[in-house]
Length: 124
Length: 487
Picture 1: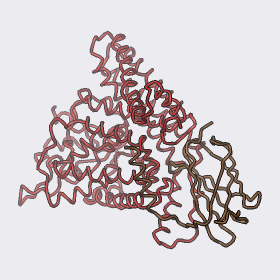
Picture 2: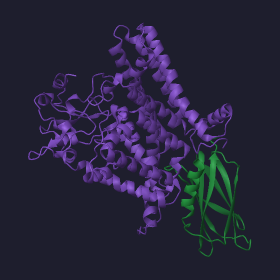
Picture 3: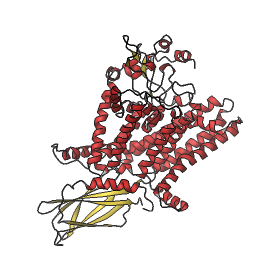
Picture 4: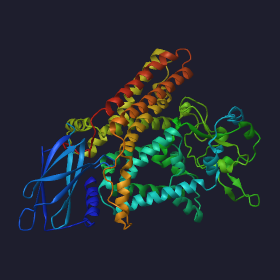
């Protein structure tokens, strides 16, 4: 029953177009430590285009939210540490289910938004 | 019961009456005051439903989840704590049924076997279970459908059955509000009992009839069967003000009283009877109290380790089974053990030789202030730490609907730091403990005049144990996630 409920939720969500979609831009990410625990973590993001070329010079805003509404969001920016490779220090302020919204503004002013689900952040 | 005798001593002359205040009083006396509040809430509910179904399926960015699980719950308990059951008064679920009743009046009476709280208790537990099982706090879509289900249920029940059957016998939120409002400071009651002695029309219960046509009711009386001269406390009172509008003598007041005092008043109540004879209301008090512990337990780290352990013991990976077992342990086994032990000690130390169940039923009401304190501590935490998050979500929603707004949504807005809210949480818990100790003390001195302290001590220890458990819970690291096993 729960599976049906989740499928219905996802179906409803899937019906909605994303705010800004650019299918030629791929966003990959890693987080350390993995799995993350409450406290500081490092988010590494790679932006590539359809030819597998890394996209440099982007500005990436990182906004972390708990899936529970009403919690303090964590807002930071990712810094480009190598061409096309971006890192952000991210503070998981408490354990629980998180999702991170990435808003990447490319050098050609296109905006790519993506969502990263990070469930089950441990309290310790 | 001798209504006349009990009424004559219940004059509120000289005491505070909300209805006599200049602005608020005038508003509440206005015949359409309730509908005005309901219309506002209806608009909010419709926005929540639409946003929940068609808005972003990210709970912190959706008005359905945000307003339901942060603002509505938080403001609800604070209003109950500071005033009374005004949320039942403003309940928007009643508006569609009011509209429907203009076209078709129900003719059926609510079935006699269901004229109690058992069905609504089961639904209350079901909502708590669904909240955890479906992670409703994280599902705008699910939350929207929950709101729709409430509207549909209220309409369906009250379309077929007379009076306020849905409020009195079905609505889980209503039961939460009723039992919480037993510790509210305001109460709707007769202003001067002597006036009721000479009243022949009893409009407060029967409604006001058109002098030209006695079959026509121009102002209905209490739909929850609370006859004002015999009404004691807030149980089952929705603050609808129908009695205020119906009374031809302008003899109903919204007055202050000692919060919780009705918990130890074992007089016969109109529409309810004696608390001590109502096993269903005793059970409601227990589910309310232990449900507060369960609901708080569901958001802290140790619950996941406990669930994993429970799954291992039961040899299952089914979340429904594990969660159901957790509910059974915390809502049935735990209260039975704790109250059974306390009742056994009371019986042993007072030497009454009475059965344990009636003892536990009488003292169950004493736990309500503690339970309410925990609900307030929990929900006010979410409200106060996230109160301003509604602003960027509203900005984002309006922008999404094409309303031009200056600037970007202020996503950094949240609320008070958790460290500042913590002392408040402890204060609410402490108040709840004091209220429960007082209620247990008064019940002991009412029922065990020969050995009141021997009767009181087991319940005082129980209250302190529950308080310590709640303090421990609120000091655990929060870990708000879906209760998936092994995650």
